[in-house]
Length: 307
Image (cartoon, rainbow, N blue to C red):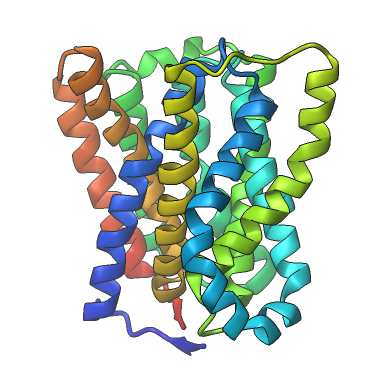
C-alpha cells in the first residue's frame, strides 16, 4: 500500500465517480426493503438477495477465483468476517430495522456510517482527520438533516426512538466493520471474485435465520413485485453497487469512500420525486449543496491509502 497524494489524481477522480454511481444504485435499497417488507419477510429478503447476487456474479467470478485461489486462501478468515458481519449482518439489521423505524430516522442513522468509519479508523489505525475533515463531516450531516427534515430542523427534536433505530445503528456498525477490513485486502484481489466469495459467506450466515423464519410460518408468495424487488436488491444493490464501492474504496481509502454515503438521502429524494410524485423543494437544493461541500472538504482532508 502507498500513500495517495493530497491532490486528486486521475484514478482517484474516476473512483469518486464510481462511488457516486454506486451510492445512487444503493439508495433504493432501504426504499425497496421498506416497500416490500409486508410481502417478503426480512430474512427471506436477505437470503434470496444474496442468492440472486451470487448467480449474477458467478459467470464473471469463477475464472479469476481459480487464478487467485492461493490469494483467496490466505484471506479466507477476513473474507468470512466481511460476509458474516459486513454483508449478512448489515442487511439483516437494515431489513429488520425498517419494519418499525421511520424513513427520517433510517436516513439519519444510515448517514452516520462515515462518522463511525472515521472514528474507528482513528481509534484503531490512528489515522489523522484534522479540523477540515471534521468540518466536512459536520457540513455533510447538516446537509442530510436539511434534506430529510424538509428544512424543518425542529423535526429532529420530535423524533421518537423505536427498536428499529437500534437495529439501524447495528447495521451501520456492521458496514463500518466491513469498510475497515477493506484496508487489509491484498492488492490485486479481483473485485468480482472477492464479492462472490463474500456473498457465499453471507448466504451461509443468513441461512439458519431464514430457516428459523420459515419454521415460524413466515413465508411469502413469489409475485412479480416480490421478484422484481429481490432481483434489484440482489443484482443491482449487491452485486453491482457493492462491487463498485469495494473497487473504488481500494483506490481512495475506506474513510474517504464513506463520505459519499452522505449522498444517499439526496438520491432517495430524487427517486421519490420521479417515482412517487413527491414535490421538489428548496431543502433538496440546500441540503445537496451542504452535502457536496462536506464531501469535498472531508475527502481532501483525508490521507487515504491506494492499492
